[in-house]
Length: 501
Image (tube, rainbow, N blue to C red; front, side):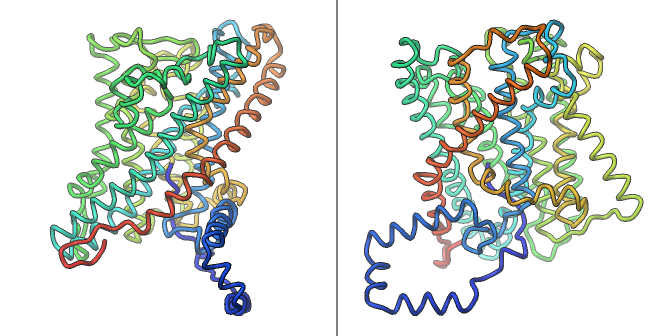
């Protein structure tokens, strides 16, 4: 969860002249000058500035050149979607069967049961960000030769690492600490529910080192912070992004890029082939699908928590590539090719098919399988691929000034604080989901209960987990995430002629 997008015109608004003059006058007094130059004064000013970055989205100091209000809305909705998904499958519907539970078989609730697709939204947003900033940096660096390109790449990797790693390491430590606290209030059982979210598992170094090296989607048993498999996928895609750009694009300013977008589209199609290999190969899943509710693990991953086809980068990269293509197109200033009736039909196709996937899922929804096993297999093959392109198309149309109603909804200012805290919320929310499960395992929720009774319980649990996740993310944002982010603009490795990239 990086904050990505396009600069809003409002982001260029500067402080009015009277305020500037007042600030200069105040700074001219000896008392004010002493306050601003003292250590405590500098710390206080930095703290205030960090707090302001949570709600002053239009200020030039907090709104980066790659930020977009539309993407803030998508990011906020995606993190809420993931939290709702974990609350539903881990707390409310855990252990229930779709054919026995009215809630699990309730079609409107399928949007929540498909909340793992929120991760695909994150991948698309990350691809959009990287497509814009990396192409820009590499085009500029190429003018200075190989060393300029090398310094730009090293700067890119260091900044990505600083964005992801510090809070990830802190989340592991916080989870371990929460487990120790829970030992005193839970009869010495710690996080007795859901071992994959437990601090006890995070105390096992064999589960921690794959997370810190961003290979835990392949190595380990998902025993610590299971949701961080997606962080590993994202870092791996960051690593290969320069190679993809080099293969798809000329880095020369004046050279036309005729076939690059077709190359990226074809590259994304490879994911369907990898999905087919996993699904139909006799030595792998042999045609069996993976479901969360009821938990159905295909071979050869019977004892694993997630199948390889769910967490492997080669089965999840397509949404990132779709975001990469749209971000590059935006960076180059390309206008949408379709207009008039053609645009209206394209928008209808994107919104209707993407909206249908919210209810049908992408191959791991048991209700869809019950209705049509063939449809479930088609969605398992191509559902995430198409959903990623739908999200990318929505971003593209909104950034071009189209889809005004949806753009207005996604640009609401209320989404901005959640978008800023989304990475911390994503890393820490399972602590609170596990706590809610430990407080009351909701055995009173009978399969025969009214759908609306169960839904009201889910709504309350989701609200509690979302609020507590936001509060914990707020603390880590002010104490760690934002201070480290403030360091990133000053990090630039120098090329041969001494100029920084």
